[in-house]
Length: 505
Image (cartoon, rainbow, N blue to C red; front, side):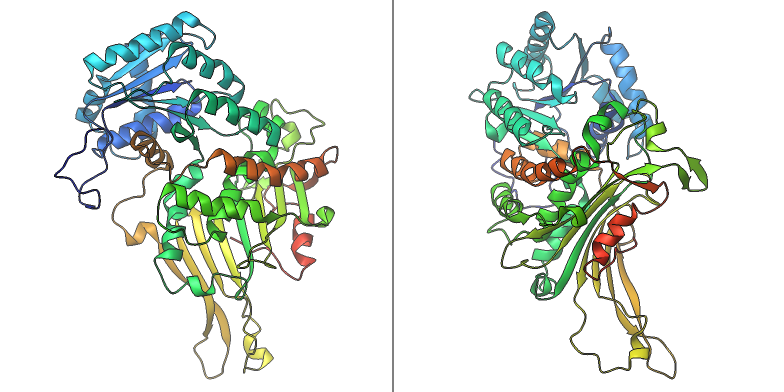
């Protein structure tokens, strides 16, 4: 690795730019590549964050050449890119776009891919460095990984690096997760495997660490002495779209509870790392995930639901079982909620309520710390009728920001205390718009920065939480809820059993 002696990595005026390299995307014609990966590559180029010597190599079954692939990339970028279209940026990028046609079990196609990478070392000066993005169904991972091993594309050699990016789901349970992790680690070294969870690339998720560890205001009350409960919500107003084949086998718990929400829980509950490095942050997150406990009474504190037809945003929407490709007798959940504990000194006794669902009233992801009520109020009961618990809410999406909810006197001649909110919004405070999660994560892969990527131990610890839930739910029918509602009534009863209620985002 060449190091510029005149450059100080602590100087924030200089952007982080990777070494010369190539990005190879398997499944380049899929939705993820068209809507997220290709636009992210362009946005990085538009911001001057890609190296001058860069190449994008697509691999798929389509009978295309470089020209047809470039047209697909151009259309996808113009439709989905975050930054403005600039023809000169595209012209530079288009000259680095290449395509290799073939199927995953075709030895000849992979030989051609390996040869194409070798040619790019001479034509584009990529130095042999390459990151491989597996934007393909997990069932195809073994075939592709073994082909890469056979052709030597996965081998690191002195002076060149090779990395692989794996999309979720990381298995379907603990056993399959371990099997998949063993396979990936047998082809690539552990440091070269990047398991991508796009939620960790969002600015507000990263701001959670800044909020906690860069301020003396919050950390003293960020514990069970002051926090009554924590609620983590991921609500979607959309249905399953065209993903029936995937969703029928997966469900809400495996789709988002196992990864996104448990990662948010880990970041919320983790201790301060010794230093802000990938290894130290992952160490603290893993401690939390291994300390997560399930409730003894799963029948009350673990709820799954499935949406029925209803009204959403003024339009009538059909039930999950009426969606195209869904079994009319399906027992797959579209909503999951569970009460978890974190058995550490900081959080012992504090319930963490997690919920995720589709066809809920609005799209929102947030982390809410609900604080305990003041031990004594010197006011009359009638003065504080509209006063609730203090809350600190981190909004991950949309309207990224932080809200602090506290009591304040209502103007007037009598003492009346009511909840008010103080808001911080990213869009209002900073002139530069937040980059898309895939922009940040792709850049980190090319830089070799694994801070925002979970390791296999984290994945396996998460499955150790979800597997008992899936075993408990097996064979039972999910509770119905009408599209446009905040989940089944059992989810409300779960909190009501302990004298609490869900926060309305």
